[in-house]
Image (cartoon, helix red, strand yellow):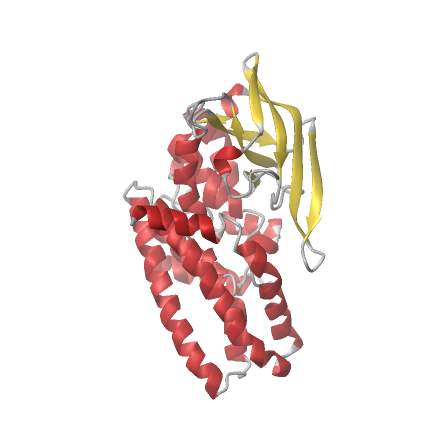
Length: 355
């Protein structure tokens, strides 16, 4: 199935023109493109068919995302919902919650932003302060989330909130789905170095959430979210965000003898990273939660992307405006890409504890 999928993705890309971009899964938003992917059966390929998916595997999804990321296709509209929220609902959500959200996610009719990071918590997710209190059959959520990509466009927000105070701060956390058009929500833009708007601060002021929109068991959010982060950290987007730049430099004939030597080293590292994420996908298919392998992918993938930028920098004086634009995109995204999904010290700490 995987080679057939690869061909289908390439055929789709040839029939749906776009301007390639680095960091396209975070910075290139085209809802129509995402919905066309859904119509073509190229979203949610690993989900059950009864919930709008393709009935395939995590390896199948890896093949699809590799092709889309290599091309620099616009993926930001559906990315969080398809990569992370849908699989989380499949693992922990009630059947009703799965039926309510998975089919529209697979069609990109419903889109998500992630409400995890908070202003005073840094990379320490367990210290978050956003709280949810019971209100009849539902909940009221109050708090602040920051670096929330796409919250100004998404229809829903995933929120991790504290529902009780326990001796162990990893206990008492719960995951929620929140409608972003709910009363009490304020979304404020945070512009990046290029003045572009991807990030936001989201303030929730006693936002009402139906009880059925709690994901999994109340108070068990930490254990659930640790597994969920494997979806966020273990994919090829951690090292293919700069591939459009690499590809464009080669196509433009900019590589000299010095750059060719560096290119060999990059190619070897890329093959290792591809093999690593393939193993991660195979663990997911076996029902595992490859938390540490995913953290390793995230750390090494970001180091690889920084190396691609360093490799391309001396070649930019001879680059065309289109190639230079890809370089500028990669460079501007590099600080954020080191933080998204967890900063390097957090990844190294997880890897070290496992060894």
